[in-house]
Image (cartoon, rainbow, N blue to C red; front, side):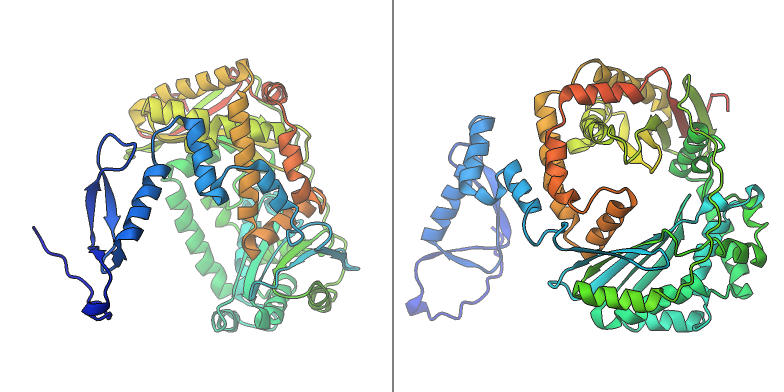
Amino acid sequence: MKRYPMRKSSVPPSKRKPCLPMAARTLPTKLFGWDTAVSLPIIAGMRITWQVCVLFAVGISLLFRKPSSHKRIELLGSILPHRKIDIMQNTNTLNHPNFPGAHNIGRFQLPNGITVLAYSNMYSKSLTITGMLSSGGAWDPPDKTGTAHFTASMLLRGNANNNFQEIHEKLESVGASLTFSAGTKNTWFNGRSLVKDFPMLLALIFDSLTAPTFPEAYINRLRNQFLTGLIIRDQDTQEKASLEYDRALFGHHPYGIPVDGYPETIKNIQLEDLIRHHKTYSPQDALIAIAGALPLEQIEELVTSQFEAWDTVSPTSEPVFPEIHAPTQSIRIHVPIEGKSQSEIQLGTLGPARTSPDYYPAYLGNHVLGQFGLYGRIGKSVRNKEGLAYYAYSSLNALPETGSWEFNAGVNPQNVEKTIVLIVDEIKNYLERPVTKEELSDSQTHLIGRLPMSLESNAGIASALLSIERFDLGLDYFQSYADRILKITPEEILSVSNAYLDPEKLVIISAGANADHDH
């Protein structure tokens, strides 16, 4: 039998108590209540008294014995009470005095129209800032799609007070970070720094938003990077399926047009286009959220002193968008991408807006349908039972004025049609009868229990604060969240789901090899 090296004890032999040597290996051990031996890990170099070993073995055997499921939950709750599933305990967490709420979230508005939400987290040593402007890809000319994305990407290439090198030396020398990005209707920024460097970070954000220089040397360099990225995008099954899905569902609405543009439109964008788009940036209706290790009064003072100098200008009027309508019949499109061993499926239809009263019932229903555990009913049917997909799930993409209820799967090209039929059948079954009480309870417990986890970091808190203001959810959103989730009934979920999902009126997209479908 192979001998394993042991760590020499510092206790003299004469004073050592009887013990069991433990080596770095696993030993088959028969535990009480089990029919067969199980392998337990043995930790290298540790010397444990026989009393401890007996207690350890008894504890493990009690924990993993084979009683009925409900007795096992009671047993786990009695041995490990901190792991007992308890909705009320999660609700109490959301109502803890230190949890973000109306009593400790600061909200103020600058004269130029910027609204700021802040939360003081003195347990941290850093701060996170996130924000958004009312300007994005929807403002792009049709022949220059990608201008908003291009403009946002140029903001850190130079401003009136710092060139490219100076900007990145300031950030990297103190371990801070700052990014800008563009969406369909908004331009976003995210930053993080230690407390002592936060004034510097605020100054960089302000200078980048108000006085970018758009150095021409970086315009051509960035254009080449974008063109390379678009070539890569055209070979990505997930990207192509998503692009075609958005185009088919949203049509000529900006939600149906990629923010990063197309090769032919990126080539059209020049310096004057970036300057023109930058003029759509305005403090009016801008939102900023901050979380971290500063008192609320000091956060307000720093933000006000930095951003009040941003002159209020008449914001560019928001473009007129075409109306969005749900499909009146199913649309089937295949995007051929040869040489791919996996195909992507994306199907769905319009969903509720984030501010709609239908959102929470649909949110819970979607959790049952394609999220809970290993992706809910969809994952259980398509992946676990039939083995047709590498992944299969559903998601609810809620936007300010509408949304998209989506179903995705990654499959072998030979299984595309089988998988589509299976997903549609699962949707039909879901729409025929209410979700079970057990499914609803599991999803409610999970959604309530994971909310505190999403707020463990400054970044999570700042992001949540921004959503609270953006969607007018109220400063007591976290405290009222559990009640909103718990009051939803299976019948309400069924009614709302049937109002949006129609198995006969879906946008169905696949992207990958072996295409025999009309494009």
